[in-house]
Length: 406
Image 1 (spheres, one colour):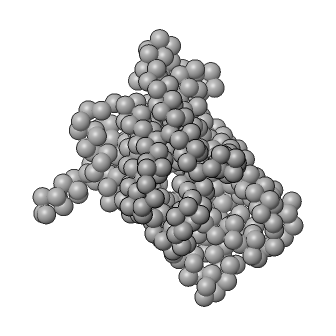
Image 2: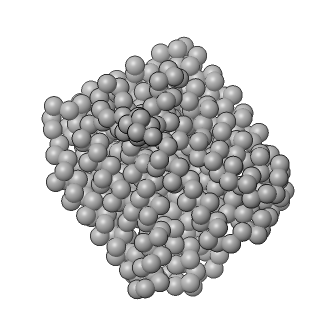
Image 3: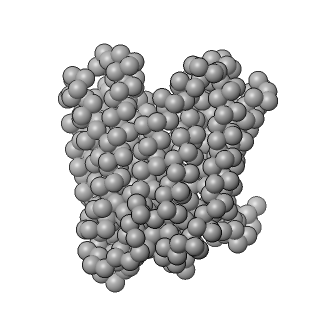
């Protein structure tokens, strides 16, 4: 047991203190992000919007996220990741406080759009920071630690939000969310001073190498595969809960427990799993493919049985796919980015998740409505396997195009 504990701790050794500071700030920020899990209920119960109206508001949410990632990538290349993160946290905090005062449908739509621009400007910058503070090529573990902070915060945030709503009011979660975002920005300024001797840190990058991500065919292919992967992944937070309830008759608290399993597994197992995969010498592309395949099988096995155990097994498969695929695909995107363009590349990479929110929820709902659960799960399995096959051509494209910064 002691050797296992020491082995677990070893996965965290060698990570720069700056990454630990960024992870602490990210945890505080994500733990405070309690508005999002309760947003649909809030819009229906407190604002009186209809389900179609809530659907449109969430579409504006996705478009705001898309634009935020695009702006965040550009800002990171222009003013540096440090200032971009601080601005995103502070302005996002003000946005969370302000949006509760919007009442009309159109004002909430546009308010959500601009809020998500501010919030998701953060994403490309934090990935570039993970690369800037890498030591001995440990960028994948840096990303893993930041992801651990995100998932731990997301696991705790809804619990705190539910207590605040029950004991105080819905308004309290907007105040707490906004204040924690601004607190996170202040902590970042206090804990992580920009140092000019770090890699391209917080300086305007004058020289750019390689090509724009929008002119890099290999990266565009990678982006397409990531969109497909993300569209499938977000079903676990939209259509899969409906499947749990309608096909298996699960209650909301049981559904919540299954989703909580995802976060807990990531918190305890992702870093050791990343270290193990790296010791195997597996390439980032192979790990990304493996993550897609695990996600694919997490859907298709749902058709094999109606037992509760198969749902747990499916959630475990999805989580393993996420733990392997997400950090290594992040690292792969960074590795494909030339000097001076990392912000733009990570901005486009992060936009894959924004596009999935715009397309994925509606596509999943309509597929289930038209074809049923079983056919939808088979369809997702086939599409993901095709995506895994497509990405196998990425190494030869990279070699032939010679566009990647090594």
